[in-house]
Length: 317
Image (cartoon, rainbow, N blue to C red; front, side, top):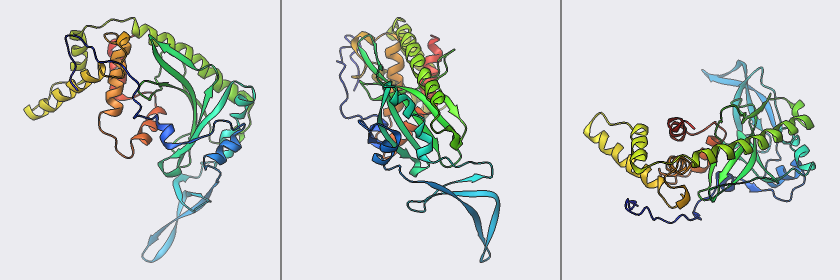
């Protein structure tokens, strides 16, 4: 699609062909009253064990010092290799502390699943007060809890904002506002009410700050010329003619996304719409490969996406 620069009249509409990554990768757990039931519904009711790691050399198996394989007991699959200091945390232990939030009727279990072949497990809660709207742009807040069984991540709990028009997950780091709660990989985490309350308070605070930040972006007006200038800084000139040709195509595609069908008319020509267009391009421009949903989920666990973050920094709000 190429935008009509005279009218910018492309109507905004929900893209029903898209699905948030957790809806693609996970299993619905709505109605489950505790983490144990949600885990069973999502097929996460398995345990992991540490097994000695050995290497084959000249027909012999040699012990690898200070290394262990993390093995899933349901199918003996190796999920990762860890060191001596790694402490096993079972799925049931990991997620049980979230029951404190659900028991207080502050949120409910929404969806759960795994990624990277089971080495990353995650669960999504939906706070009861979770709606945000930016100039008619509806968003919903979630609480994403995840950990790894390969030693690459501690227990992470963070708020995620889903923009409904495009099924994009936003987990931006905002100045002065914590957006990630981390806990050590230890079984003592299970059942701690204070940990659950900390995670929920973080989510509610972040949701409020995110809404204020997003509305501040929406108040910043941009002209088409300014948008082109920003995009030119995002995608610098190529060093060769062929490289510049590709980058010019990229700039045009970003401008298309900034004024595309997932950006409401009210948010065209403001910084919120611009950043959302860049984010839309970053998440969806490269086609729909098989691993896209998993990549997007893993992106959601990080502070932000590269291109989108640069766009936010350039605007400076």
